[in-house]
Image (tube, rainbow, N blue to C red; front, side):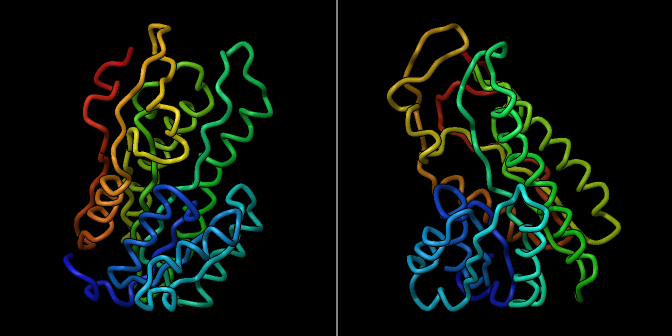
Length: 258
């Protein structure tokens, strides 16, 4: 869909909307006329994202401080969305963490638990709540986009928890797609490589490669990842992108790392 206004009235929820890709997607949806709920751990970055959209877009924004790892917090988040907007057309499951890198034999169990809780359990909890809302609304249905990673295909060194979580997100995406058919709920996944965010900041200076060397990697503007999410989000209900990969040209990727 082209231009602001064509999506007026449609409702999106973006998790991890206080920075990076989530902030970019939330701002772009607001600019295109969507009503948008922005969720994240800290309230002020969410408010800043909504304000930055400008042009009265903040009037169509709802900011909710939420912890996607907590079932109670997720329930409260979706109750706030339903209370303000009455429905949900799009969930962008974006909240995620990389975790502190470490060799497998030294990887702390607490760090494993924290990464899995955010990247996988958080995505499940939000998808679960979205299903409950989308299948009962009128018109029913909607769309879920999971933020995967190129690590869903090929790992980086010392990233056991992050890699495992993103492989699991791919399974979650397929399961949601299957169960969503009966309810008009589409689910797809975008795997992003080296968008310039706080998480990828060190890549430009040098990061560990599979062969043990440390080399700088190319990065791309976040706008390229945002454009991919928008394309998926604005497809008509009868169409779906199951999987999309958007990556910086020349980066080590699932076609061969190291």
